[in-house]
Length: 223
Image (cartoon, rainbow, N blue to C red; front, side, top):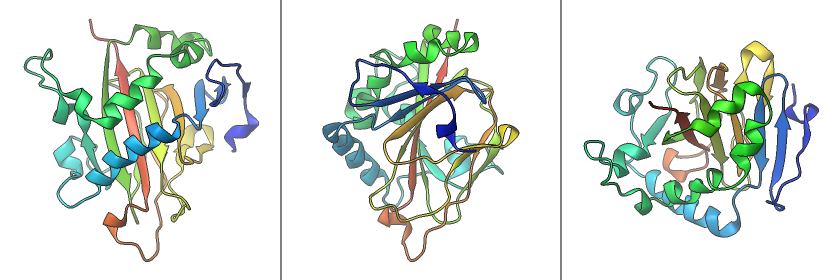
């Protein structure tokens, strides 16, 4: 099922961004060309840094879902935030954590909030964590839900021209797929089951960085 069959484009002050809201098959928001060239340059600087030996972590080391995925990742908040005293943090040192605040500081979450009453909780978000995950040849994520959170924001990046096949975000219960094109974002409720189809790349070393990058923001409301 192609996502373009659903919804309609929403007017936005962010005139250079494609903003599409959807009620079916579940509430979600799609953003195309979200980051400009300067922002993308900053993001790629950091992605390239992580795509080096001994930077990305195995599933059990980043507290991932063992048995569901074989893709490596890095939880950025664990690197740049002192959880023992949250007033001490170094988030500004991360290009990704800095640039991605754009999602939270404009009308995007308000548009998502208006899709359906179940999206209203997004406006009460007071905690978010961010993880960078890289998918190379043979890597995947089996269908699952992220029950600890209420909203997920997935941002996708890959080098141009695209060098891999697969890697689609899919929602098996709804027979629905999102192609995860470069510089696109999807926002949806965390209770929606989702997975990542296996990535296939031929004649590419892991550290070439020709695979599929996902920057995920997990949103929650803490009392």
